[in-house]
Image (cartoon, rainbow over all chains, first blue to last red; front, top):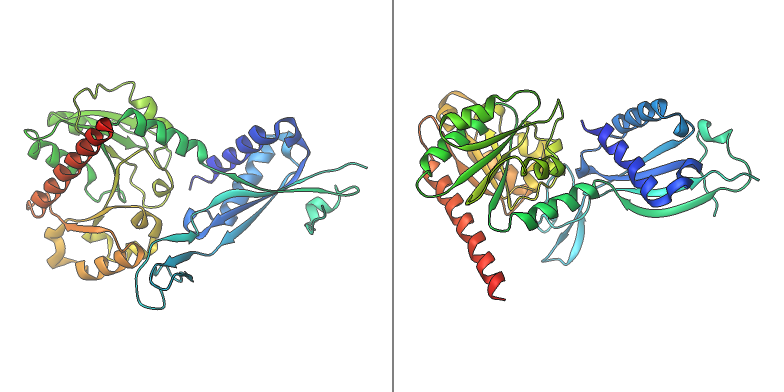
Length: 115
Length: 242
Protein backbone atom coordinates (compact mmCIF):
# COMPACT_ATOMS: atom_id res chain seq x y z
CA UNK A 1 0.00 0.00 0.00
CA UNK A 2 2.92 2.35 0.49
CA UNK A 3 4.84 1.08 -2.53
CA UNK A 4 5.28 4.57 -3.96
CA UNK A 5 7.02 5.79 -0.79
CA UNK A 6 9.29 2.74 -0.94
CA UNK A 7 10.10 3.57 -4.56
CA UNK A 8 10.90 7.16 -3.57
CA UNK A 9 13.11 5.75 -0.82
CA UNK A 10 14.88 3.58 -3.41
CA UNK A 11 15.79 6.68 -5.43
CA UNK A 12 16.75 8.73 -2.35
CA UNK A 13 18.99 5.88 -1.21
CA UNK A 14 20.59 5.50 -4.65
CA UNK A 15 21.18 9.25 -4.95
CA UNK A 16 22.62 9.39 -1.45
CA UNK A 17 24.98 6.50 -2.11
CA UNK A 18 26.01 7.02 -5.73
CA UNK A 19 25.43 10.76 -6.29
CA UNK A 20 25.46 11.78 -9.96
CA UNK A 21 26.34 8.20 -11.01
CA UNK A 22 22.73 7.28 -10.37
CA UNK A 23 21.97 8.50 -13.88
CA UNK A 24 24.10 5.65 -15.23
CA UNK A 25 22.19 2.95 -13.38
CA UNK A 26 20.62 0.50 -15.77
CA UNK A 27 19.04 -1.95 -13.38
CA UNK A 28 18.55 -2.39 -9.67
CA UNK A 29 17.63 -5.46 -7.71
CA UNK A 30 15.62 -5.11 -4.53
CA UNK A 31 15.51 -7.99 -2.07
CA UNK A 32 12.33 -8.13 -0.01
CA UNK A 33 11.59 -10.66 2.71
CA UNK A 34 8.09 -12.09 2.81
CA UNK A 35 7.47 -10.20 6.05
CA UNK A 36 8.28 -6.82 4.56
CA UNK A 37 4.76 -6.64 3.08
CA UNK A 38 6.16 -5.72 -0.32
CA UNK A 39 4.28 -7.14 -3.27
CA UNK A 40 6.57 -7.45 -6.33
CA UNK A 41 3.82 -6.59 -8.83
CA UNK A 42 2.68 -3.52 -6.91
CA UNK A 43 6.20 -2.20 -6.40
CA UNK A 44 6.93 -2.76 -10.09
CA UNK A 45 3.87 -0.68 -10.99
CA UNK A 46 4.87 2.06 -8.55
CA UNK A 47 8.39 2.00 -9.98
CA UNK A 48 7.09 2.30 -13.55
CA UNK A 49 4.85 5.19 -12.50
CA UNK A 50 7.78 6.94 -10.82
CA UNK A 51 10.19 6.66 -13.74
CA UNK A 52 7.46 7.78 -16.16
CA UNK A 53 7.29 11.03 -14.16
CA UNK A 54 11.04 11.37 -13.79
CA UNK A 55 12.41 11.22 -17.29
CA UNK A 56 16.03 10.97 -16.21
CA UNK A 57 15.38 7.44 -14.97
CA UNK A 58 13.16 6.29 -17.81
CA UNK A 59 15.56 3.54 -18.93
CA UNK A 60 16.03 2.09 -15.45
CA UNK A 61 14.74 -1.35 -14.59
CA UNK A 62 13.74 -3.01 -11.35
CA UNK A 63 14.00 -6.62 -10.33
CA UNK A 64 12.43 -7.77 -7.07
CA UNK A 65 13.72 -10.89 -5.33
CA UNK A 66 11.49 -12.30 -2.61
CA UNK A 67 13.08 -14.11 0.32
CA UNK A 68 11.27 -16.83 2.24
CA UNK A 69 11.00 -16.63 6.01
CA UNK A 70 13.64 -18.49 8.03
CA UNK A 71 13.68 -18.64 11.83
CA UNK A 72 16.16 -20.03 14.37
CA UNK A 73 15.34 -22.68 16.96
CA UNK A 74 17.28 -22.21 20.23
CA UNK A 75 16.80 -25.83 21.20
CA UNK A 76 17.90 -27.46 17.94
CA UNK A 77 20.40 -24.64 17.38
CA UNK A 78 19.58 -24.47 13.72
CA UNK A 79 17.48 -22.56 11.25
CA UNK A 80 14.13 -23.80 10.01
CA UNK A 81 11.90 -22.58 7.16
CA UNK A 82 8.65 -20.92 8.19
CA UNK A 83 5.70 -22.05 6.09
CA UNK A 84 2.28 -20.41 6.21
CA UNK A 85 3.52 -18.06 8.93
CA UNK A 86 3.75 -20.88 11.44
CA UNK A 87 6.82 -19.99 13.50
CA UNK A 88 7.14 -23.47 14.93
CA UNK A 89 10.26 -25.60 14.51
CA UNK A 90 9.80 -29.21 13.28
CA UNK A 91 10.78 -30.18 16.87
CA UNK A 92 7.53 -28.55 18.03
CA UNK A 93 8.93 -25.47 19.77
CA UNK A 94 7.88 -21.94 18.88
CA UNK A 95 10.45 -19.38 17.92
CA UNK A 96 10.11 -15.90 16.53
CA UNK A 97 13.84 -15.34 16.17
CA UNK A 98 13.81 -14.36 12.53
CA UNK A 99 16.94 -15.01 10.52
CA UNK A 100 15.50 -14.05 7.16
CA UNK A 101 12.24 -12.51 5.97
CA UNK A 102 12.16 -9.00 7.47
CA UNK A 103 14.70 -7.49 5.09
CA UNK A 104 14.11 -4.83 2.48
CA UNK A 105 17.18 -3.57 0.69
CA UNK A 106 18.79 -2.77 -2.63
CA UNK A 107 20.89 -5.86 -3.26
CA UNK A 108 22.37 -5.14 -6.67
CA UNK A 109 23.01 -2.12 -8.86
CA UNK A 110 24.00 -2.54 -12.47
CA UNK A 111 25.51 0.41 -14.32
CA UNK A 112 25.34 1.19 -17.99
CA UNK A 113 28.79 1.25 -19.48
CA UNK A 114 29.55 2.86 -22.76
CA UNK A 115 32.38 1.51 -24.90
CA UNK B 1 31.93 -8.04 -13.48
CA UNK B 2 29.43 -9.75 -15.73
CA UNK B 3 25.74 -10.00 -15.33
CA UNK B 4 22.99 -12.23 -16.58
CA UNK B 5 20.24 -9.68 -16.91
CA UNK B 6 18.45 -10.11 -20.21
CA UNK B 7 15.07 -8.47 -20.04
CA UNK B 8 13.84 -6.93 -23.29
CA UNK B 9 14.10 -3.41 -21.96
CA UNK B 10 17.77 -3.46 -21.09
CA UNK B 11 18.96 -5.62 -23.96
CA UNK B 12 18.92 -2.73 -26.42
CA UNK B 13 20.86 -0.38 -24.16
CA UNK B 14 23.72 -2.51 -23.17
CA UNK B 15 26.95 -1.61 -24.88
CA UNK B 16 30.15 -3.39 -23.98
CA UNK B 17 30.63 -4.71 -20.45
CA UNK B 18 28.32 -3.93 -17.59
CA UNK B 19 29.44 -2.99 -14.12
CA UNK B 20 27.54 -4.68 -11.34
CA UNK B 21 27.64 -3.54 -7.73
CA UNK B 22 26.44 -6.09 -5.18
CA UNK B 23 25.31 -4.08 -2.21
CA UNK B 24 23.16 -3.90 0.91
CA UNK B 25 21.49 -0.52 0.90
CA UNK B 26 18.71 -0.83 3.44
CA UNK B 27 15.45 0.88 2.63
CA UNK B 28 13.30 2.68 5.20
CA UNK B 29 16.45 3.22 7.28
CA UNK B 30 15.63 6.94 7.41
CA UNK B 31 12.51 5.97 9.37
CA UNK B 32 14.54 3.88 11.83
CA UNK B 33 16.97 6.76 12.33
CA UNK B 34 14.14 9.16 13.17
CA UNK B 35 12.50 6.53 15.41
CA UNK B 36 15.69 6.34 17.47
CA UNK B 37 15.77 10.14 17.72
CA UNK B 38 12.24 9.99 19.15
CA UNK B 39 13.33 7.33 21.67
CA UNK B 40 16.19 9.57 22.72
CA UNK B 41 13.85 12.54 23.13
CA UNK B 42 11.15 10.65 25.05
CA UNK B 43 13.36 8.95 27.62
CA UNK B 44 10.96 9.80 30.45
CA UNK B 45 7.79 8.80 28.65
CA UNK B 46 6.40 5.32 28.06
CA UNK B 47 5.34 5.33 24.40
CA UNK B 48 2.76 2.85 23.11
CA UNK B 49 1.92 2.44 19.43
CA UNK B 50 -1.69 1.27 19.18
CA UNK B 51 -2.53 -0.52 15.92
CA UNK B 52 -5.55 -2.31 14.49
CA UNK B 53 -7.97 -2.45 11.57
CA UNK B 54 -10.40 0.47 11.21
CA UNK B 55 -13.29 0.21 13.62
CA UNK B 56 -11.87 -2.19 16.17
CA UNK B 57 -12.25 0.30 19.00
CA UNK B 58 -8.90 2.10 19.38
CA UNK B 59 -10.34 5.56 19.99
CA UNK B 60 -13.00 4.32 22.41
CA UNK B 61 -10.34 2.37 24.31
CA UNK B 62 -8.11 5.47 24.49
CA UNK B 63 -11.04 7.50 25.83
CA UNK B 64 -11.94 4.94 28.49
CA UNK B 65 -8.31 4.41 29.48
CA UNK B 66 -7.82 8.16 29.83
CA UNK B 67 -10.84 8.43 32.10
CA UNK B 68 -9.95 5.41 34.25
CA UNK B 69 -6.31 6.32 34.73
CA UNK B 70 -6.89 10.06 35.11
CA UNK B 71 -5.77 9.93 38.76
CA UNK B 72 -2.87 7.54 38.23
CA UNK B 73 -1.11 8.65 35.06
CA UNK B 74 -0.65 11.74 32.96
CA UNK B 75 -1.66 10.59 29.47
CA UNK B 76 -1.26 12.23 26.06
CA UNK B 77 -2.38 10.89 22.71
CA UNK B 78 -1.21 11.44 19.14
CA UNK B 79 -3.98 10.28 16.85
CA UNK B 80 -3.41 9.29 13.24
CA UNK B 81 -6.22 9.58 10.74
CA UNK B 82 -6.07 9.70 6.94
CA UNK B 83 -8.45 12.65 6.61
CA UNK B 84 -10.27 13.96 9.70
CA UNK B 85 -9.69 15.60 13.11
CA UNK B 86 -12.57 13.70 14.70
CA UNK B 87 -10.61 11.37 16.97
CA UNK B 88 -8.56 14.08 18.68
CA UNK B 89 -11.77 16.00 19.32
CA UNK B 90 -13.24 12.86 20.92
CA UNK B 91 -10.15 12.63 23.19
CA UNK B 92 -10.26 16.25 24.23
CA UNK B 93 -13.96 15.94 25.05
CA UNK B 94 -13.02 13.60 27.88
CA UNK B 95 -10.12 15.78 29.00
CA UNK B 96 -7.20 13.94 27.37
CA UNK B 97 -4.31 15.96 25.95
CA UNK B 98 -4.48 15.02 22.25
CA UNK B 99 -3.12 16.08 18.88
CA UNK B 100 -4.37 14.84 15.54
CA UNK B 101 -1.94 13.76 12.86
CA UNK B 102 -3.79 13.96 9.55
CA UNK B 103 -1.77 11.75 7.24
CA UNK B 104 -3.38 13.11 4.07
CA UNK B 105 -4.65 9.79 2.85
CA UNK B 106 -1.52 7.89 3.81
CA UNK B 107 -2.07 4.39 5.11
CA UNK B 108 0.32 4.59 8.06
CA UNK B 109 2.17 6.99 10.35
CA UNK B 110 5.92 7.43 9.80
CA UNK B 111 8.42 8.38 12.49
CA UNK B 112 8.99 11.79 10.90
CA UNK B 113 5.31 12.67 11.47
CA UNK B 114 5.68 11.87 15.18
CA UNK B 115 8.84 13.93 15.50
CA UNK B 116 7.11 16.92 13.92
CA UNK B 117 3.96 16.43 15.99
CA UNK B 118 6.02 16.53 19.20
CA UNK B 119 6.76 20.19 18.48
CA UNK B 120 3.03 20.96 18.52
CA UNK B 121 1.89 19.20 21.68
CA UNK B 122 2.94 19.99 25.24
CA UNK B 123 3.87 16.67 26.81
CA UNK B 124 5.57 18.09 29.89
CA UNK B 125 4.85 15.70 32.75
CA UNK B 126 3.35 13.03 30.49
CA UNK B 127 3.94 9.49 31.80
CA UNK B 128 2.24 7.63 28.98
CA UNK B 129 2.04 8.67 25.34
CA UNK B 130 -0.28 6.71 23.08
CA UNK B 131 0.20 6.84 19.34
CA UNK B 132 -3.07 5.78 17.79
CA UNK B 133 -2.01 4.55 14.38
CA UNK B 134 -4.05 4.65 11.18
CA UNK B 135 -6.49 1.72 11.03
CA UNK B 136 -4.57 -0.83 8.95
CA UNK B 137 -2.97 -4.14 9.91
CA UNK B 138 -0.40 -4.13 7.09
CA UNK B 139 1.67 -1.01 6.51
CA UNK B 140 1.99 0.34 10.07
CA UNK B 141 3.78 -2.89 11.03
CA UNK B 142 6.84 -1.87 8.98
CA UNK B 143 7.30 1.55 10.62
CA UNK B 144 9.02 1.93 13.98
CA UNK B 145 7.66 5.10 15.59
CA UNK B 146 10.10 5.15 18.48
CA UNK B 147 7.65 3.30 20.70
CA UNK B 148 8.47 1.16 23.73
CA UNK B 149 5.59 -1.22 23.08
CA UNK B 150 3.26 -2.05 20.25
CA UNK B 151 -0.28 -3.07 21.11
CA UNK B 152 -2.61 -4.50 18.47
CA UNK B 153 -6.37 -4.65 18.89
CA UNK B 154 -8.35 -7.35 17.16
CA UNK B 155 -12.14 -7.08 17.43
CA UNK B 156 -14.20 -10.23 17.74
CA UNK B 157 -16.19 -9.07 14.70
CA UNK B 158 -13.08 -9.23 12.50
CA UNK B 159 -12.67 -13.00 12.69
CA UNK B 160 -10.11 -15.08 14.54
CA UNK B 161 -7.96 -15.77 11.47
CA UNK B 162 -6.17 -12.42 11.42
CA UNK B 163 -2.81 -13.19 13.10
CA UNK B 164 -1.85 -15.55 10.26
CA UNK B 165 -3.11 -13.14 7.63
CA UNK B 166 -1.18 -10.16 8.98
CA UNK B 167 1.75 -11.91 10.66
CA UNK B 168 4.17 -9.00 10.81
CA UNK B 169 1.78 -6.91 12.88
CA UNK B 170 1.39 -9.64 15.49
CA UNK B 171 5.06 -10.58 15.29
CA UNK B 172 6.07 -7.02 16.21
CA UNK B 173 3.47 -6.53 18.96
CA UNK B 174 4.02 -7.17 22.65
CA UNK B 175 0.30 -7.33 23.44
CA UNK B 176 -2.83 -8.35 21.54
CA UNK B 177 -6.10 -6.98 22.86
CA UNK B 178 -9.11 -9.00 21.74
CA UNK B 179 -11.72 -6.23 21.77
CA UNK B 180 -15.54 -6.21 21.74
CA UNK B 181 -15.69 -9.36 23.87
CA UNK B 182 -19.32 -8.49 24.69
CA UNK B 183 -20.14 -9.70 21.15
CA UNK B 184 -18.56 -13.14 21.64
CA UNK B 185 -21.95 -14.88 22.13
CA UNK B 186 -23.08 -13.62 18.72
CA UNK B 187 -20.07 -14.07 16.45
CA UNK B 188 -18.11 -17.14 15.32
CA UNK B 189 -14.90 -16.11 17.09
CA UNK B 190 -12.74 -18.24 19.35
CA UNK B 191 -10.40 -16.49 21.77
CA UNK B 192 -8.49 -19.77 22.21
CA UNK B 193 -8.03 -20.17 18.44
CA UNK B 194 -6.87 -16.58 17.94
CA UNK B 195 -4.49 -16.86 20.89
CA UNK B 196 -3.04 -20.09 19.50
CA UNK B 197 -2.58 -18.55 16.04
CA UNK B 198 -1.06 -15.37 17.43
CA UNK B 199 1.41 -17.39 19.54
CA UNK B 200 2.42 -19.49 16.57
CA UNK B 201 3.47 -16.23 14.94
CA UNK B 202 4.87 -14.69 18.13
CA UNK B 203 5.31 -17.03 21.12
CA UNK B 204 5.93 -14.09 23.46
CA UNK B 205 2.77 -12.09 22.70
CA UNK B 206 0.53 -11.37 25.69
CA UNK B 207 -3.23 -11.53 25.23
CA UNK B 208 -5.97 -9.65 27.11
CA UNK B 209 -9.66 -9.91 26.20
CA UNK B 210 -11.53 -6.65 26.68
CA UNK B 211 -14.86 -4.92 26.24
CA UNK B 212 -15.02 -1.18 26.86
CA UNK B 213 -18.81 -1.37 26.67
CA UNK B 214 -19.14 -3.98 29.44
CA UNK B 215 -15.94 -2.99 31.23
CA UNK B 216 -14.42 -6.48 30.84
CA UNK B 217 -10.65 -6.89 31.03
CA UNK B 218 -10.14 -3.16 31.36
CA UNK B 219 -8.62 -3.42 34.84
CA UNK B 220 -6.11 -5.96 33.54
CA UNK B 221 -5.27 -3.62 30.64
CA UNK B 222 -4.84 -0.65 32.98
CA UNK B 223 -2.61 -2.71 35.28
CA UNK B 224 -0.51 -3.72 32.25
CA UNK B 225 -0.10 -0.05 31.35
CA UNK B 226 0.81 1.00 34.90
CA UNK B 227 3.40 -1.77 35.08
CA UNK B 228 4.98 -0.69 31.76
CA UNK B 229 5.14 2.95 32.85
CA UNK B 230 6.74 1.86 36.13
CA UNK B 231 9.31 -0.29 34.29
CA UNK B 232 10.20 2.61 32.00
CA UNK B 233 10.73 4.97 34.93
CA UNK B 234 12.82 2.39 36.79
CA UNK B 235 15.04 1.69 33.79
CA UNK B 236 15.49 5.44 33.37
CA UNK B 237 16.56 5.78 37.02
CA UNK B 238 18.97 2.86 36.71
CA UNK B 239 20.50 4.42 33.60
CA UNK B 240 21.02 7.67 35.52
CA UNK B 241 22.74 5.87 38.40
CA UNK B 242 25.15 4.24 35.97
